[in-house]
Amino acid sequence: MNAAACDEFDPTALTVEQARAAILEACRAVTGTRTRSLETATGRVLAADVHARLDVPPARVSAMDGYALRAADAREAGSRLRRVGQAAAGHPWDGTLPPGSCVRILTGAVVPDDADTVVMQEHVTPDGDSVQFDRPAPENANIRGPGEDTRRGEALYRTGQVLGAAEIGVLASQGIAEVDVLRKPRVVFFSTGDELVPVDEPLEPGQIHDSNRHMLRSLLSRYAVKARDYGIIPDDEDAVREALESAGREADLILTTGGVSVGDADYITRILQERGEVGFWKIAMKPGRPLAFGRFGQARFVGLPGNPVSAMATFGLFVGPALRSLAGLPVGEPRTLRARLCEDLRKRPGRTDYQRAIVETEDGVDVVRSAGGQGSHQLSAISRANAFVVLPREADGARAGEWVEVLPFSELY
Ligand code: AMP
Ligand code: MG
Image (cartoon, rainbow, N blue to C red; front, side):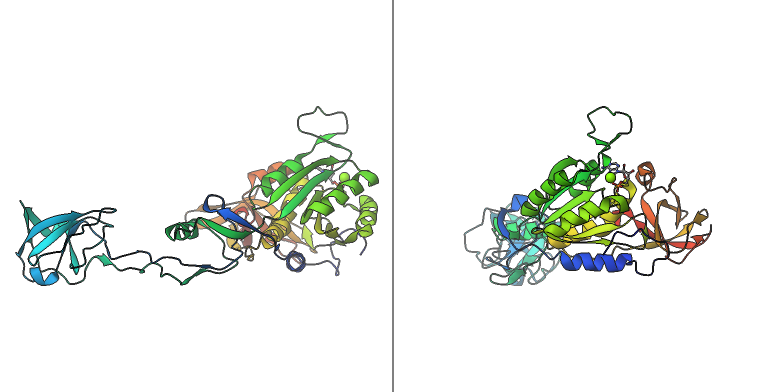
């Protein structure tokens, strides 16, 4: 493939969906595993099936604060039983229950063997050492049976399960302190460009601060990945080769920004083809100039455009899903909504537009308006925005009052 510019009408350009599918196909889950304690397992993916070790609850326990008794001893309203003991959570009562007696019981306490029901305390009138039951005692009430939550030996979770708060809680209830999870994908990222200067150094004429790398680091921090920052690499064939060679040895994914424009692409192509493969994909979307995708060494390579808005948009649409896939997480289609457009939006037919926009609910209706400057260098507009308005490839714009497709940033970032 060569680095031809994106023609608005290029029939060979990939759709966003085609590009996504191809990237996901190439970014299958990593295979290495690690043992992790529950403290550090949130968001990780199980690398082995987990079975229950225990019955939970482990015994019959009370679901209420009240009294444990034989239901037959309080068949009628007004029955009086002698209170012979107390069972609290962590403090079982180990006596035997004589006929005509009951035991004070608190939530989570083991129900004495001879008792077959628990009456909630709101339905009794205590009186010295005895208790009057205000209504007939129901049978087998307010008792949680052993294994009602999980049963020893049952399959709890399969390989591939993502561990969220509820799963961590279940594992803890089983006394499982450690789990085998997939290792985190390793990502190396760097910026390319002779004009780029670190944020903490003053600018000379013609220079700009390197914003992409900070944006990427921030974006990457939301994923279960090990990210390594190689800094700013100048537009120099040897320097880029050196960075890629090192990254190609240690990373699962190499992420760069800049240097994939038509003028730059030749030397990047040369380097990438030496020890890998690369395609400069024309994707029928805007923003998003040619996106480089391939391999270098053992790593997949994604070369994002240098323009910051394009870099952020293509990260959301392609890199985020790739990272999830590498981590073994499920990857769904981003969910869009329909909103009513407050103003005319302009575009040229040929590419799908992802215009930066603000969507909000007014009088129960989702409405959307432009977030301002739509240039791919205008990062401040994406910062004001909370969504993309997705305008179809063949459309020449959209008019105020039309219902348009909106992709909330919460689906991407
Ligand atoms: P390129 O893809 O290298 O041709 O860059 C396209 C545009 O994005 C140029 O205006 C660059 O100066 C700008 N650019 C590239 N990399 C960065 C970066 N890391 N931070 C901010 N702007 C960048
Ligand atoms: Mg550049």
